[in-house]
Length: 102
Image (cartoon, rainbow, N blue to C red; front, side):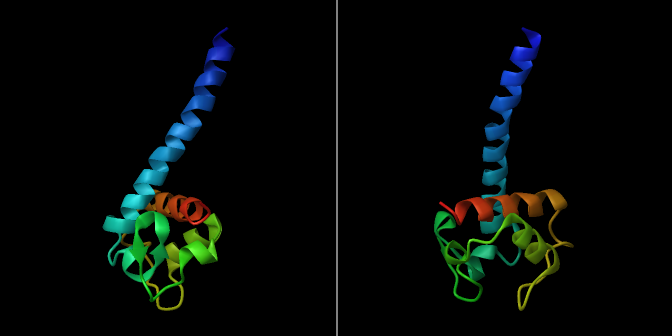
């Protein structure tokens, strides 16, 4: 019985944590990152229509691509590894990779 309850709790916590990560990533995308991701990128879920960077809904980048771009920068996009925590970068990568596929 204990194993069954633990297994159920584990299954239930996955989506809850994922939703929290999604929400945190959206916050980073819209407000926390400076400059804001929404200034340069179009992403429907975020209500952004930037014209400088790629349209993320069309690009549909993978989690790994986003982690690399946000951490180290790419093209004219600055690196955020010094201004965002590893947790914030993970959250925004999860958000963009999920929201761009909706």
